Image (cartoon, rainbow, N blue to C red; front, side, top):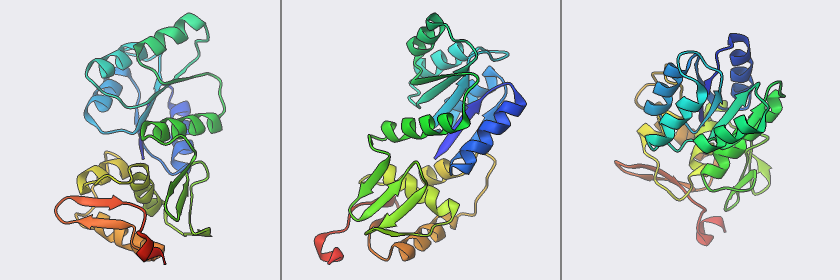
Length: 225
């Protein structure tokens, strides 16, 4: 899952970036409103962390432009402002959640994970697909109750497929959501990683649709037993 952080304080930006990356998320950063608006308008993020007091273009304006352009990515607003009128203005502009500075990094991570999950239609922190269980809070995967050891990148791929289970996810879409904007993966790297995940699961759950992409779905009764 890929997150945009728009915050003008470099040290705070770094701390947020590190916390989100430690949670298994891919992070891009912007330090002013104009760059943040541009990235959110042109890149396919799963969520954004947006400060209100930004240079060049304030956070409310950034958010308003995204929503006016039909950008539906979930947005968590970060700000030192704690008056209700300012919170209401952020929600009116299209914010999905709100955290007031100072805050605990664990709370930001938890709220971003929840926003991503709910945007994909999952209310529970645990996403279930047949015998597969993906713990979005703990970053763990199990199959029939047994842990599945995955690398960070394998987890990101399986997590994206699990969030969007039952839908065909193309190679370009998958790549855009598991790599940051500066990455330039080789053309077949996604195929290799999907093949590794298949082997580790040991059961047919990730289906290849030639020329289209992959779809994660629960195995049939015949396949499971």
